[in-house]
Image: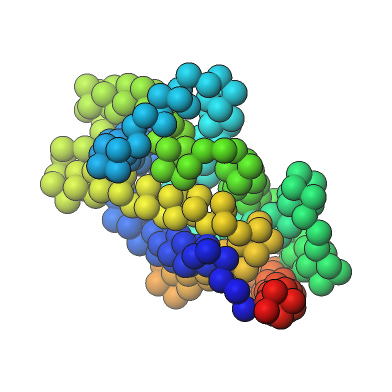
Length: 296
């Protein structure tokens, strides 16, 4: 099987870091989700600016900032990933990690649909069967459990939109992430200043949480850069094979470490999702072997 220019390594790194990140955000649970995301934006800008300076790639930023079309597209991707951040941090810190797990299990199958609609990617009957089975799992939560998994759907759709737009935009992973966060940095900084003057912010209250909030830039930037690099090097459908790492980590953390309730309705839904993930993964592995044999 031919490795796609390091794409799988970038993907494994990104999804494993995201899978374990609820532990990190739980340590900052005294801060609100919006405050945590605001810190993620501000410290990400500073950290990435440092990297761009070290790698001498600041000139590219000037070109992006003077190209209205690229700015508009990065505004869309920044909005999508910002929504994803808020939903994820909130679900991690408020006992909804199972919904987060479900959302990220669904996301690769959302990528299948988006890849067909916007990138003319082709998928076989097994991938479409996986999409159908996953849809049954979501419908089970709606009708049997009596709840619309809006957190799951929001996470899946926002990250799916982010991935497909970042795949087609002619901007590097590092430069794109810098501009995405830079666009929203003034709003985030103004909000944090307001929290500080109001006395309700958590920053500087105690050194442990202050350090964790400052490190959020690194924790945010590294997996996103790795993901953006993987998106550039892999088909969306192939990328989805590795994406199951994240929700599996979330499921294990939610049920076995954070004690979230796992009902019979959850069992049926997750069983269907796991079947869908198995079908999707098997089809992807089969296609990889076939394509590799054809290349060799």
